[in-house]
Length: 312
Image (cartoon, rainbow, N blue to C red; front, side):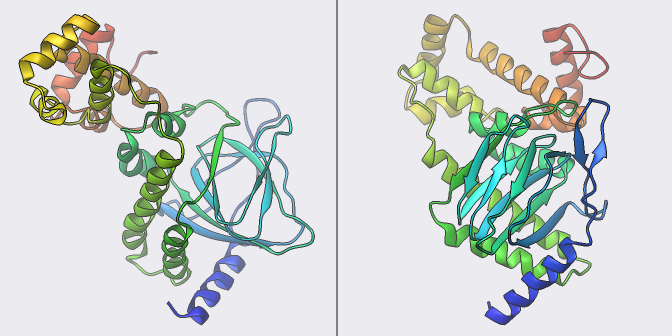
């Protein structure tokens, strides 16, 4: 990519940044200020460039997912209303869920450039969230809080390979600066690749404790493959006979493979129904039900209430 092309695109998005609607709106909850989707409602993804020196902002919340990348310089973020302050260094990613609050402050003595990747809730739940179902820590982070809560939760980390993330963002910056009819179609796979790189690097930097017993390892594997896992898949993965897997689970956990799979699917479905605006049909597919009617029946039998229309 030519340096002049990139510099021109960064300048364009910086100028466009100031024209977006960043106004903070009152909420029903006292003292809460929220920024709604600042871009075109028809857009799933917005790419921003925030270039400042010695600027600050009041504490606020968003109603969309965001990933802020420190492209140049560093900045401080107040991650809670009580004043929890963290410094985001160059090549670090700072991310938050909808209704996660923060306030940014850049130093007086240096120029700071932030590239922001903003994603609509519905797009994130439909296309991004399923990609981290095997990473329980990230999955729960992005799923919680549910859509009617406020949170001071965020995550940040230093990229292991910043060149990969930076290259993806630079391509998105150039594309979004010169928007065309198919720009959103081009941005979606690029944004997904960026998110998967974050998930991969996050998993390496913060590995989950290894399960000690085979039965615990099997539980983890089932949880990471709810959409399609079978007893045969588990047997192949762990090099055991299916009958041995069944006997092991029954002996150590007191449940059959089918009962364990049902429990994990229903718990995952409940979280998705509580924390997203996905349809019942979409949730059914995400937890492994091709037929939403079968999902509806299983959910009602498990929770004694329908998927929608009742508090879970």
